[in-house]
Length: 339
Image (tube, rainbow, N blue to C red; front, side, top):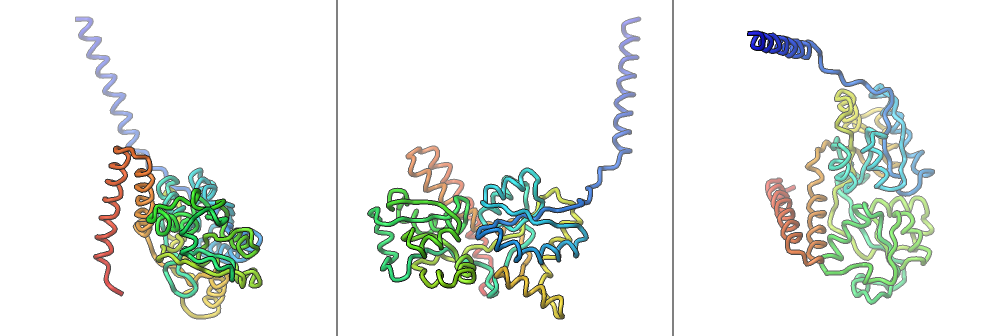
């Protein structure tokens, strides 16, 4: 009888401890999200921080005042650093162009709060190819390859500087820039514009917004550059926030952007002047589905890369991924009302 009695006592004690743990866990309230004392807002200084900081600081100051939390700018020099900064919680919110925005959503626990509208009211922008004005270089000559030209791509993670020209111009024609051109280098839009204007590069990628900034900053050099190719419209930049940011603060930030520069009166006029300096017209609501066109472009590029390997398994997997994304995107486009 001793062994069964001991077993029953052990069972009773075990059940009592389990019950106590359950009751204890039920009595504990979930930890509340702590309101941050400071928020870092990520900005890519694609042109240069010296020229961009004065343009962004008034908006940063207005954000701090409206949400009741100090916001500080966090400038990065390239897209990879911007994504990693959000991934490792160095920043909580930021302005991201489309492809880095998608990577921030996929890899850095980010979500889309809103999208940008340009100064002309457009909700998209374009990738472009630029050459020195009067050079005689045409798009047909560029696509003719023959290792004649020094070519400049954008940052490897740039939507307009690399992804769009590859997805819409080179890949469909089976052109690999490294075998097509004399030299290929990758740099910022500003650096590429300077290089084309000064004759260092024969042709380079850029975008419609970068061209506006370049003309404003260096009109003398901008007069030496012309566009020979324009892509189809691309999704404008997004405002991305970390998912684990205090929901109340996140909503205040969302509302700040959706209402910034709207309405009437001196304050609204001042805000519109700030937006004009950034070449923006305002912001609209958006969620992660806003990045679907970028997902489709990435899937198309992945499929092209897989076909180059000749690996049937890789090709099949890439084809299936593309078909799924393309199908979803096609259904969404078909459902959208004609404007």
